[in-house]
Structure formats: C-alpha cells, structure tokens
Length: 282
Image 1 (cartoon, one colour):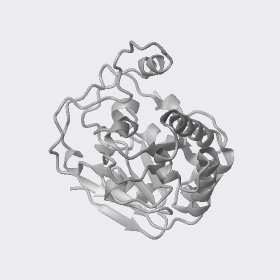
Image 2 (cartoon, rainbow, N blue to C red):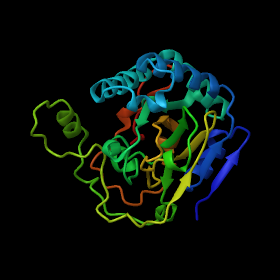
Image 3 (cartoon, rainbow, N blue to C red):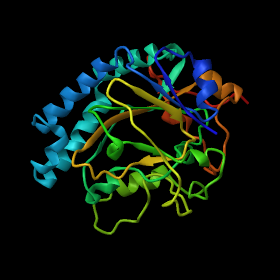
C-alpha cells in the first residue's frame, strides 16, 4: 500500500525515486526558495487579472475577459525565465540534481469555482497514459492556500490495479488539431486519455498542501482534480521531471495499464540548457 510522507529535508534523486517509484506521495514542506517562485507567479497573475484577489476574479470580470486572462497568464508563466529559474532552485533545495534533470513545461493551472468550469480540471487519469514515460515524477504546488475543496485526489488503491483506458489510440496531434480548429463542429478528442471504467465511487485520498510546499508523486498514480465548489478559484503550478540515468537503466514505476503506441521523451528538455532527453540506449 502506498503512503504519504512529509519531508522537512531534501531527498536526493535515489532516495526520492525509491519512494516515488514505489507509489508513495511525498510532501516537501516549506521548501527553501519556493516562496520566491510563488511570489513571482502571484505577480504575473495579479498583473494579468488586474485585481487584488485573483481567486474571486471570475465573479468580477465578464466571462470572455476572464477566459482571456487565464489563457494569457498561463502563457506568461510558461515563458517566464525568472519564474523558471526560481522553481529550478527550489527543486534543487528539495534534492533534485538539476544538472541531470529534464522537465516538460512549467504549467500554471487555473480551476475556477463551479461546475460550468469543470473542464478546466482533470478527471481520473495517469500521466503515463499519455507520456508512457514511467520514470516521470510530478511536482505540484498551490499559489494560494487551498482546502479539500480545491486540491488533488488520488485513487491510491489503483496504484497496482489496472484501469481500462483509451491510451492505445489517444493522439496529442489530434488534440492540437482540435484546439486550432475554430469551427463549431469539433471532434470530441479528450485532452488526455480517459478511463473506460466507472470511477465515480472509487475510494480516494485528498491531499492538501500549502504555498511553499511541493507535492511529489509518480506520473503513474491515478489522480484527478477535486471538483471545485469552494467559491474560490484554484491556482497551482505543476511540472514533470525525468532523469536520463533512470531512462537508461529502466528505473521507474511499473507500467500497470498504459498502452500508448509511442513513448514521448521529446516532451522533456534539460532544466538548465534545454537539450532534449533521449530514449534508452539500444
């Protein structure tokens, strides 16, 4: 059975991998430097929304203006080298050897209040259904304080239990094509592979961390957003890392039920100099 571990000190890549690839959820509490990253993202968010309280901006702005602000600030965070440098330093303070680490992108997620915004969150999924990279580690941190109504949930009992899913025929190219198609008749291509099993009654574990904490877990974990009916929008940042040595040696979490036809190593680039990660040596 997987568990939740709170760490007040750094874990090196080997120590952390031993826990994460075995299914543990690791919370790095009050990570040095993460506050500076949070402050940078908070500045970008407030500048874009033009409000003192981004968590309630959805009730102050017209829907089109709010949607545009969300889209713009996500792009700003993704491109902000200052924020990236601060997050890289915080990861190093949690024990990541950044000279050997690769990440995908720094993703700002905004989950507004209300069922009409449910598509901004994610349903039950494993990240490995899409990436097929089982050496992948996920990092997640909120920008503003959260509660159980604005957190992540995990189906930890499914760590070693397969779930039927659509990973075998999911295509990121189809998702991008749909996103760029402005016509009203779009094909319903899911943004991520979806389960084919009814998981509405799955036993779940809700994990609450606060700004300054880093939640670390394997991309193999079955997880989802908690539907937000809290009255406040959730702002969080996530990034995924891999290490070339883990890929080369086949170290990672077990493949329980991913049937993706390809492995998307190209999504990952070096955190410091941007070179792409490569697949395992033949």
